[in-house]
Length: 548
Image 1 (cartoon, helix red, strand yellow):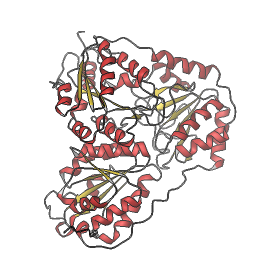
Image 2 (tube, rainbow, N blue to C red; image 1 turned 180 degrees about the horizontal axis):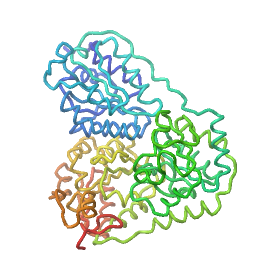
Image 3 (tube, one colour; image 1 turned 45 degrees about the vertical axis):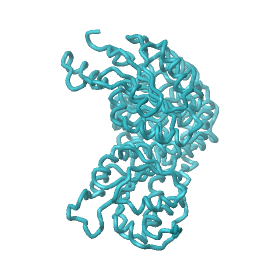
Image 4 (cartoon, helix red, strand yellow; image 1 turned 90 degrees about the vertical axis):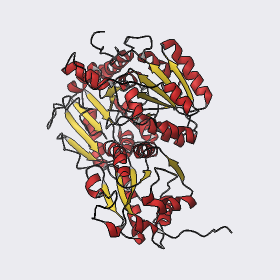
């Protein structure tokens, strides 16, 4: 006889609350500490993606938050599960991504005994999340979940961590989920918008730096039209290169690692800098040198969702509190015609010159690989990456053509590209999703390729294999020449690794082989790995390994 009764425990109520908030997918590593929540998910119309390690699950949730603008959801078990997942929480915090991590916890009657895998999550995640709490009563689950969704999405978005004691989840409860979160508009005061436009209209050498969270495809279009009307050159803060179509006449490049020297000088020479959503952190300011704290040489207009961020490092001449997505649409409406003149024309010319490939050593040249991706990928293709010197070719030469076609961690986390690609393909199965990874970066999360195969997520992973942790080797060459230490890697046959999962795998040793291999991978319909055997001498687009 089949039992069709509906569960009425805390885990069931929790999943009902997630459904009420519009959650369609969660990522997890199963654990005995939240069995009741897994039981609740059995009856829910929510897709459950089982990852291979908690860090991968959390990064998938973070990438989902980036793609949708709504909290990505992950479930992990207590202790080691939570510590593994912390990498994804840190990414969400630094990238201002809405995300909620649910962590199993020891039963409430065992707290403070150092029970098996017990951790004080408020202490552990306090510096990494917007809010950390532990649900101590099953009947308060709707309240806590509603609060979490409001906090994760309001102001400067970010991660929330909720701990779930076993006995709270398994206890009998009756209750109703709260309705979907009601969020502020994020718009700025109209007097502030008018003042910003007036200041820009009289600037001789203005420059806009876009970044932050709460953007959208509509906001990106409005940004382009606002820049056109007012003749403003627009640079992208670190790993925010898809905030404006790179083909737009007002786009002038990325202001991040490996910045175009001409663009760096243009930032220094600007008389007015509008930071629209960007925090102006270390990467975007080249170590706080393009703008000098606390009072920059340029007049600074800082628009940010979090009032505590304004003035944190730089004292602005004008400060506006508002989420950049709504604000840029306000600016577009209020814009006054202005001629960008030679300042804009030359800025764009500098970008175009920087796009011309600089030849690097070896038979397989990454600058040509990226050029081929530019030529064959559709405008809506999503490109992901983690951290490593291989990203320098991508950031310099790839042209992002649409909103949220770039998924990359501003926190600089290795291993991000593969989980992010899986999340992107699950969210947008109709789109091409390409992950770029270094040999070290990929092996941080290589097991998640199994998740892609299990889910039928036919991503394509391009692994740049130079047999080393290239970024650290580069820094060693700069600071301790001739003394490499701890940076060599012995790598597997990555193509065979893909085939072991019944995916597509191919080894590419020359530029001529790359195009056909990519075409075969796309045609296969399978999760794929292209093992790119690059010359170790090519440390970066501009730097060669010593002795070469």
